[in-house]
Each structure stands twice: as structure tokens, then as C-alpha cells.
Length: 211
Ligand SMILES: NC(=O)c1ccc[n+]([C@@H]2O[C@H](COP(=O)([O-])OP(=O)(O)OC[C@H]3O[C@@H](n4cnc5c(N)ncnc54)[C@H](OP(=O)(O)O)[C@@H]3O)[C@@H](O)[C@H]2O)c1
Image (cartoon, rainbow, N blue to C red):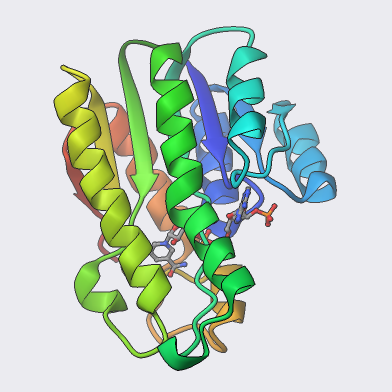
């Protein structure tokens, strides 16, 4: 099984890479932090393909250079950078939309054609009821845009097995952008195991991971 994971240098992405490696998958891992990416790829015997998902050219090149078609594609990149709307900083806004929306757009644009028949796509989304909170304008809006884009991708690609993964809070480095990890946050491994288990069963539009 050939699996490509974006955001593999992050908490959920790295845990998902480890879970797929344990299941015997052949892995290609992508992230921006080259040192962390190479270390994880070395540990798991995976290919490392650094890319900044804000650039369509990086994503296009990554898919053009893939040696083999994919069975599973996981999009686990993301950013939160909360700030009040009145003080929205253009660089932070762009960072959030690049990670949560534009990167996924380029991955769907260039990646869907590289999937084997019956191939699976997992996009990490967010539960609207959990992210409609002060400071989260860009995070909530970009995740809503991602969910709508996922619906339309299914309409445009008949038979596309695309699952929006909706975890509650998960204990990862993402929360360093917020200040503190919420009490009761799940371990990233729980999300990873849910994705790998889901991959072995029938595809669903949404995967609501529970503790
Ligand atoms: N943690 C939670 O509570 C939670 C809950 C629900 C959904 N989610 C979603 O789950 C996904 C994974 O989150 P996480 O908690 O694992 O976050 P994380 O640990 O902060 O990891 C974020 C990942 O996104 C990558 N990334 C960000 N901007 C990028 C860019 N421009 N180009 C390439 N890679 C970029 C980071 O790469 P580098 O570090 O290499 O730059 C890192 O691999 C996100 O979509 C997040 O919104 C998280």
C-alpha cells in the first residue's frame, strides 16, 4: 500500500505515518521542516519530500516526481495562529490559509490523478462547533472552506473516496500557537489509528474521531 502524508512533521501527521508504517505501508512523507522530516523518514524507512504547501509549484513537482501511484493520501498540514479579527496580521492570515486551505487545494488539484482506483483521501478538518471561538476567524473560515471544497471534489470526481477527518482537540504542537492544550485533548495516536482502521473499511464522507 503506497501512502503519502502531508504535514508529516506535525503531531497528527507523524503519528499517522507511524501507524501506517506499522501496518506495512510504503510511505512518502512531506513537511516543511527538513531536519524533522528526514529524521522521521529515516526512522520509518520512508521517502522524504519537503514542500511548502503555500506554493502550487512545490505540490505539482512533488506529484510529478512520485515514483508510483498512491493508494492513500493524507492531508494533515494545518495552522491556527489565533488573533482577534481587529488585529488580523496579513502574514499570519496567509500562513493559516496556506496550511488549511490552499495547500489542500493544490494537493487535490495535482494529487487526485495520482490515485489508484479505489484510492482513499483523508483531509484533516475541524468541528465547526469547536472552532467557532474568539480569535479563530481564519482557522474556522479556512476549515469551513476546506469542507465545502471536499464536497465539490466528490461531485467532480465520481467515485472519489474522500473522508474529512473531524477530531476533537488533540494534544499536538498546534496548541503552542494558542497557548495551552485543552484539558481532555486526545493523543495524536488515537486519530492516527482511527484513520488506518477506517482505510481498511468502507469509505465515509466524515470520520468523527472520539476519545
Ligand atoms: N491538534 C488539534 O487539536 C486538532 C484538532 C482538529 C483538527 N486538527 C487538524 O489536524 C491537522 C494536523 O494538526 P496537528 O495538530 O498535527 O498540527 P501540528 O502538530 O502543528 O502540525 C502541523 C503540520 O502542518 C505543516 N504545515 C503548516 N504550514 C505548512 C506549509 N505552508 N507547508 C507545508 N506544511 C505546513 C507543519 O509542517 P512544518 O512543521 O514542517 O512546518 C506540520 O507538519 C491540521 O489540519 C489541524 O487543523 C488538529
